[in-house]
Image (cartoon, rainbow, N blue to C red):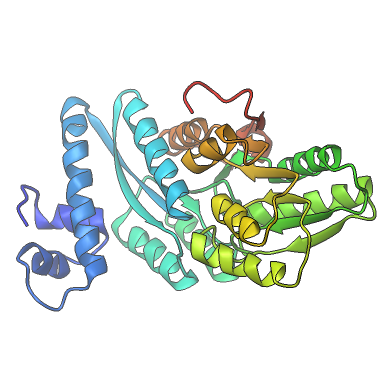
Length: 340
């Protein structure tokens, strides 16, 4: 594997030891595929950042860690790279660890590596667990600020949250479905990627509270835990539909929407109303086809840019949630943005 960067620099970018990087670069045995992939990714990132670093004086390193479906990982990477390149007067070097599924142990290990090698700030999308909160407290003590993205860890030592107001989003979804489903005893399917994501839990709680107030006879069936991935989401829903349950509406908080629709179609069903989150490629196509009616969208690029600005400028106090929350947009097939 050819390169022009010092092994220490590659190791720092990849989050690996220099010995492991040396084995990868020299194509030696006893190296995991994951380590090879991380070294290859580190080299690509270093090459992409090289021209930027050469043209600007001050440089900082920011880490982006996220557990999300691949389609959303792609959106996070695009938003981070755009935000980094737009930061005035500073060269931003990004280090990514983006995975569809990231266990608590993997997240803690990633944060431990960052604590060891240093960082100007961490953008984090992760599950809300006590060990993770403890790790964030340790990072804060080491003067490495953590900023949560899209899903928060309220009450932790994180320095700020950037993203939409998840409770507001849940209430908006409840209102849209209540207006779209005339039957007061409608059956609504809800889907979350992970119960441990606080953002999705906040959406669900707010949705449930308002929809049951608006339509007391409504039936909510939850099919969560599919991580927004096609196979697992389909398997979760297939078990429910095998019991001959008729679904009238869907509120999908965690993705996998094409899989939800395909599985329902396989059982001869199509929802009368469907509310999804995030205007990614899949949801854009589903909107254009009329397969879903509403997407609750927020400007991820703006969130990332504001987060990076806070990290680079070294905000000395925690940032109030209200000041960092994104505006919620309701996108339909008839008001798709031109960029979509």
